[in-house]
Length: 209
Image (cartoon, rainbow, N blue to C red; front, side, top):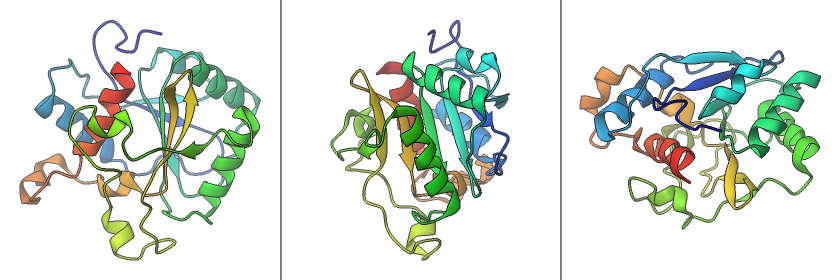
C-alpha cells in the first residue's frame, strides 16, 4: 500500500451504513491545517469521504471513523475493514460519546472482536512510538470532554490498539478527540497550546511506522 498515494497525504473519513458517521465536521480541516503548519509532507486539504464498502478505501493512507450510535458493519464493510487493516492500512477510531458503556463503544469493540479476535484490542503503552512520532507526549492528552465530566466522567489514561505485524492497524480512543478538535482552525490563536498537535503525531505515525 502506498501510504502517501503518489506523494500527497489526504484524510479519509469512513462512511458506514449504521450509526452517524458524519460527526465533528470541522475536525479534518483543522487537523490538515496543522499538518501543513508543522510538517513538510505534501497535503491535500480536502477531506475525502469514502464508503467503507467501496474499494476506494484501499487507496487511503489514513482513515478516520467515529460516531455516537450503533456500529454494525454490513458484509462488504466488514471485508474491506479487515483487509485494509491487514494490508497495512491505518484506522483512527474515536468514540464521540466519550463513554465506554455507550452504544458506539460497545458496538465498535464488538465489531473489532468479530473481525480480529476477542483480545485483539489491547492497551497501548504510554511509552509507545506513537507518542514521540513528531511531538513528545507522555501518553494520550486529556480532552476537555473528560475534564468537564462528559460521557462516562472518566479521564482515560491510555488508548487501545489492534497491532498488525508489530504496527498499529487500528488506534481506538474513548477520549473524543474529534469533538476536541472540532473548531475552525483560525481559532487556534486563542489556545495557549495547540491541542491538535497529538493529531499530527497520529498521522505521522500512520505514514512512517
